[in-house]
Length: 113
Length: 115
Image (cartoon, each protein chain N blue to C red):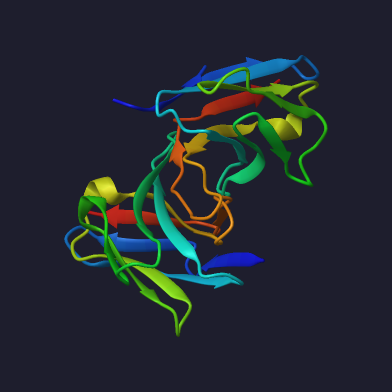
C-alpha cells in the first residue's frame, strides 16, 4: 500500500520569492514520484518525475524536486515564483507494479504581486 | 501535437438522465484512465484499461460504466446521475506500466453539472 501527504493545503508567496511545497510518501515498493500542476478548470500537467535515477530532478518552468529516501520526502521547489505559478499542485506516488497513482491532497499556491 | 482530448468541456445533465463523456488520444498509449475530481480534492481513480482489459476500482459505484472500442477512444457512461456526481471528470493515458512506472498524461477535463 502507498500514501502521500502534502503537508500544506495552502501556500502564499510573493512574486520573485522562493516556493517550497512539501510532500511525504509511504510505499511498500521502490516508489516513482510525480509532481503535477493544475490551473483552474484545466487538466493536470506533469512538472517532473522521479523514477530511481538522479535524486535531484529538474522539471519544467524552473521547478525541481529532491528525493530523500531517509526522510521519505519529495519536496518541490522553485527559486523565484511567478504570477503564473498560482495553481493547485499535486504530489503522487506509484509502486513498482503498474501505473496507478496515489495522489496527495493538493497544495494551493497563491502568488502575491 | 500528441494529446488527450475530452469532449465536451462542459456538460449539463438532469438528475437521472444518462450522460456520456468522451476521451480520445493521439499518443497511442495502451493504458487509459478515468478520474473523478470534486472541488478542492485530489483526483479519484474510477477505472482504467490496459488495452481492452478493464479494471474497476473497488469503490466505484455501479452507476459508472466505461467503454473502450479501440486504442484511441474511451467513454465514461453515467447511467443515472445524481447531484453527488457533479464533478470534473479527467481522462488520462500512459504507456504500459507493468514492470515500470510511466507518467500519466491528462486531458483538460469535462465539468459535469447535474440539475
